[in-house]
Image (cartoon, rainbow, N blue to C red; front, side, top):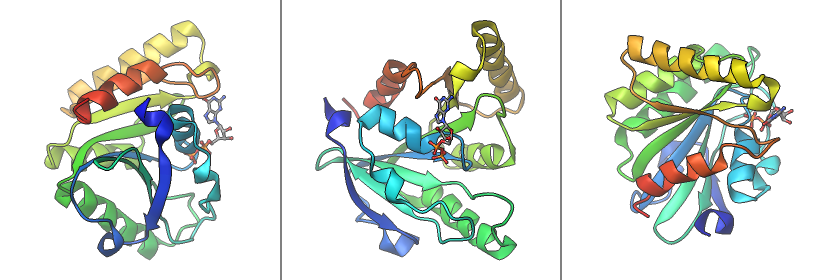
Length: 196
Ligand code: GDP
């Protein structure tokens, strides 16, 4: 299966270092600690993300995971904790916004949020940029194993309601890397974006 064959294919710290803009990409974004590395590992079975530095203040990297000659998953880090200098945050925001707006290969954005702390400022910003770029978004409410079945359901509904109210189009699901639940649902969305 395609996603199981993913392999690390380099990193970029700025847009000029990105690989050629052809083929199809799906990007993953989320605030630090949202569970993005774990989710990419769960989806692909690769561990390469462990190599990326999570030190606050360090230059953030855009990591590429190639699936085949035409398709890649792109790991777009959110900014880390409060310690990141404001100037660096702003520069990184500009990089993210520009990537979302200009990248032709980009077919969709998977936005990961801790299911206990959804729709924070970073998330809303990503959703707004994606909307401006007419880019489809699929939201993973991560670590859903931390919520009871009922709490998961009501969180899912609350997030959907908030998105409707804010007129931010996105599909939403619960996801747990720990329980490996929600994987099939994500793959279905990726397959669609990747024309599979
Ligand atoms: P990232 O910073 O977004 O890449 O987040 P990580 O994938 O490194 O995860 C951050 C923390 O959340 C780690 O301590 C993980 O073990 C934990 N975590 C990630 N996914 C899950 C999950 O599905 N369930 C639980 N309970 N913890 C998780």
